Length: 119
Length: 116
Image (tube, rainbow over all chains, first blue to last red; front, side, top):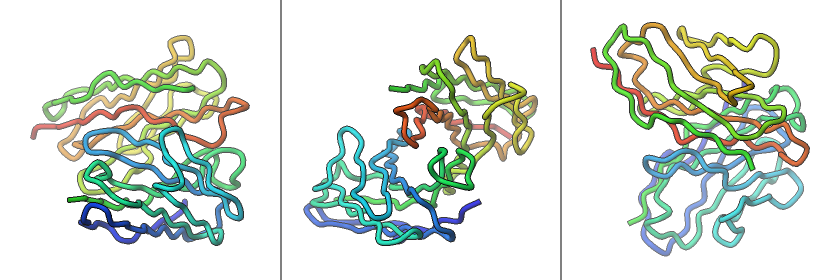
């Protein structure tokens, strides 16, 4: 299985500022995913981050608000820009899933999450 | 697009009671099915998964799930719950269709509380 770490684990931010969340994986993976889990709700995919290309965003999420970097096969960052209280969520990094990534047999592994509170 | 429904948002049981959590999905093609668990203060962990073969899948901690293709269902069961099973449970479906990409679709989650 993949071991995923995220930094920071939690943060409290002011409205209008930005926060960059880091995700580190213990093995090389083709695709990394960023999810959001709003209070009391399920997980929603924000975007898929491919190494060497632009991230693919899901409906309702845009690059200007959630810029993503994927500089190598073990690391990715998600920035939450110009934050508002509505951005208060847990943000999760995930790897694996699907035939395009090798070795994980359609199983996805999740990081511990970053709990963001925007005042 | 795939959608996943979990019928029970909150379930409260006493220890030793039997558990069944419902999960239905919408896509009629090839799917891979998962149940994840999130214990309080912890991150998501895989409970069990179904890819093919025997539709009755055994997972960790005494959990099992049955894939019924005709009903588009993948219900989670445990014969006798323990206080330590208190957690939130998520059903997820990987849509194996041509245009699906590599995306898990999650259900809304079921929050289980087991009373000692």
